[in-house]
Image (cartoon, rainbow, N blue to C red; front, side, top):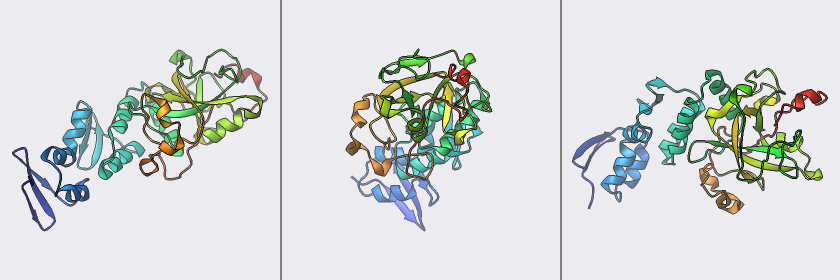
Length: 289
């Protein structure tokens, strides 16, 4: 059964579930709506027509779309996260993980940490998980302990934590206290794979990020918590991560068409420990995990 509609001068009027919707050419899903109109059900059309209601409902009203602008608790959200949410919505891609990411980011107690994380996100391709976390890399010893102290177990499945107050929030200090992760080529240069070091993939909640040091092109960060979800076996190109990390270990499973990254280049890098170029200062190494 076709959905009742009227199309005049590019303006589309739909009647869905006994409610009238007007779809103008500037609607974020305008082209998609026209494409699916002949075959879509009322329920399917409501999901892409009433995007603002869907976003507000999904985020309990915290995140809204108003006049093409992403807001959080009524305040406009600028930068990459806003751009990607709107981009995903316009392409009909699953935007819920990005909304979850924004929710998590706003739970970070430090405004400065929120701002610094954007530097890292702008610079790197960061796969976003379904629950709004992101994935990064970390170099560890052959026994999966941290490189310089051998204190923390970084085996797959382990959750590594430290008190947030003990993580250095001064981005001007490249080498300092905290749990570290970052871009792949930075990590690869930091670890020694020839000597048996391993690279693991860690899952980080944006709310737990404390600092993004300004050295090394913002390719590393300090956090107070991460979960080890896998061992590096190839580039991370798939944007979403399921509860079963093994689902994405086969490179053939990566959906390149929907691969999401924070910038437009194709190479996703990630790094390990927060080691500065001042590698002669062994005292600084003692505080890096």
